[in-house]
Image (cartoon, rainbow, N blue to C red; front, side, top):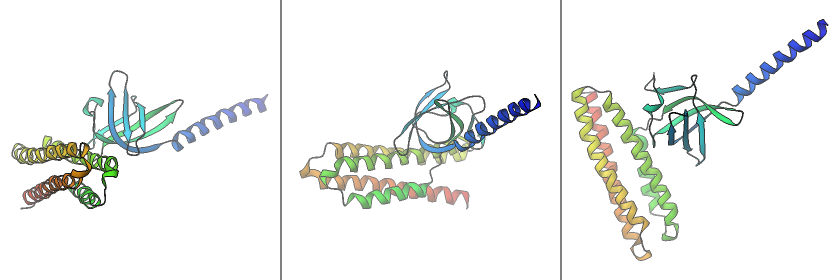
Length: 223
């Protein structure tokens, strides 16, 4: 009788241990862009950096963080780039923690430099690949502008004004880049090199604006 009791207890302990181990082992971290938020159903959809569509369940244990503070799900929005830690449970993915990914000015400038260098090698036959590359860089630009907007929201009144001016300029040049991207989409073989030249010029203006903005904020933070 005692043996049976011990056996049952051992089996239960083993089951709990295995379940806990599997939960820990299944914890993974991904980065991607929010494609949909369903607040009533506590669900969130993202497209990961490697183009996978994932859906996460959010419960009372999920930690939603921004700037080191816990926030509600409605603090996140469609298009925001985030980092998510999750665990796989029976047929679904439970979100453990989520926070926005911060993009620095240096990262954006590097992305722009890389695409400007790569653009020289793209032929008309590689137009779709070039478009995908441009779309990725523009998304990173949007991430950086979003980061600046977040910093502005937490700043004092005077600093907020400085941010607003820089953000307005960056947004204007960002829209010009998107306009040139439409020209790439409709480009003909004969106009291909001219279109790439226009794209290069728009990105160079945007890169210069990011450099000036970074220098502007450094000079005010460290007079």
